[in-house]
Length: 137
Image 1 (cartoon, rainbow, N blue to C red):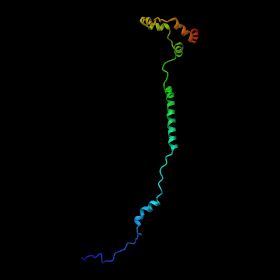
Image 2 (cartoon, one colour):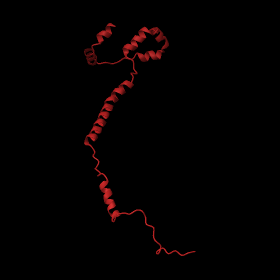
Image 3 (cartoon, rainbow, N blue to C red):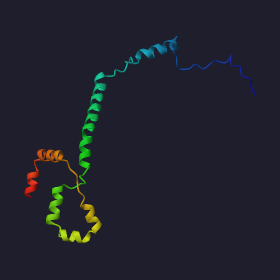
Image 4 (spheres, rainbow, N blue to C red):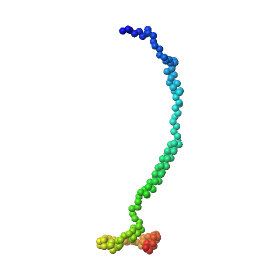
């Protein structure tokens, strides 16, 4: 095998040439060509708009809670008028049927006397205007 003499042999030149100080100035040239970065601007109105919308949503929810609560709660007690009308017109039970079912102990419990003061009775009679209608019925 022959020994290589690299220094004596002609060297192959590359087809590319670069100007002098090319790599020194390269980063500066690239930075000049890039668009200047502008700081991100956050609009005050956008924040204010979201705060206003949030407050409006909370206000609407606060106003809707009592309405929804009233709609969901159904009246579980009957009016006295409705109960009287049902017993009068729909029921086939009369007072004698009720008495025959009740025991004597139940009847004596129902006959309790209520002690009322005269002043309390007068106050109720003077403030309640429906008493005349109830007496006539």
